[in-house]
Image (tube, rainbow, N blue to C red; front, side):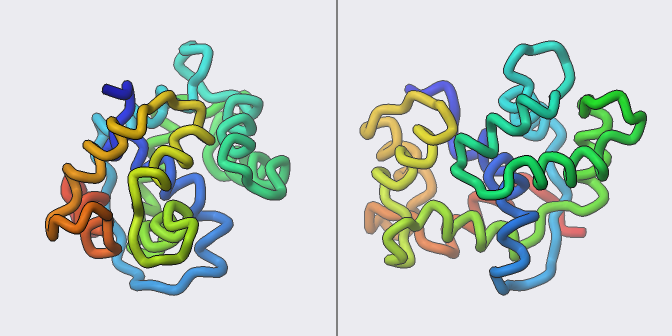
Length: 176
């Protein structure tokens, strides 16, 4: 099985896409508090060299892997907000402060769904999950991705619909 699950990278996707996509996606404004244990796993994915802090280069690499535009500008923006002690790194405490303050909005989750749904079918396939994981540098077989989709697919159609995605993304979070 892959060393990453949908739950492990759910916040990564929603937070990485939120700054750019929230400007162009519409949705509800309800927000959810992130789960600390899951946020630690997300933080660890950003912290490539495992030194306990995220550098601008590490953050930049994640955005590049996600094929984001204006990477330099996005990195500067997040560091301006998150790097409170101005040491050019984001430690876990700073990382959590930003996420606890703003939470994860339903708008962000809907935008993340659209990033996965590359064919605009309104459903996410195992192949689409694999493509996103691959861009993030994660190795995951198609069979593993099918199992991940199956774990979220409550209607048994072999895909993850918007409602299923929303439920999966928010099941461990508390509404603001």
